[in-house]
Image (cartoon, rainbow, N blue to C red; front, side, top):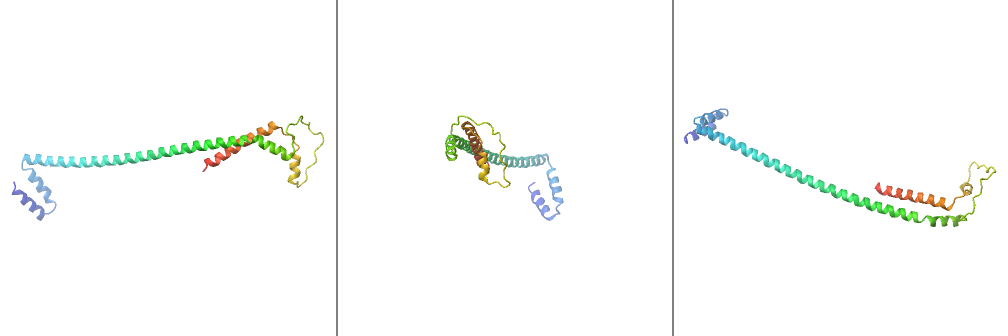
Length: 180
């Protein structure tokens, strides 16, 4: 049996390449013990290969899980940062709106003082019965403004309009900040 191994090795080295598998099979088929030994070696080789493949799969799964966890952490951090920035922007917009709305009375007083308006008119004049003068072809801005300024606006109207303007400006400023 031991003498057959050198002869087999020599035949593998000197013979053609297609003969050695047949010689190996003939050598194995000599006894049932060799057949069982060969099957055990094949089973061990397959088990080793499967173990290696399972280890590779486990390593790939571990790397994938690590990458997924890192991406989830980054997404969570980005979400928290966005929420914090959104709360900060909302607080700033509220403060801006409050400041703009609070200045309405002062803006009315300044406008009234600049334009010589009475702040508490006792009555509104009725509509003018005469036809207004036609506007010239190329009116000067002062002339048009003078014509428009003859309209009576009450303090309540002014404050309502100013509150709407303050809300619109705060929303516009917030929108500008949200777009950045």
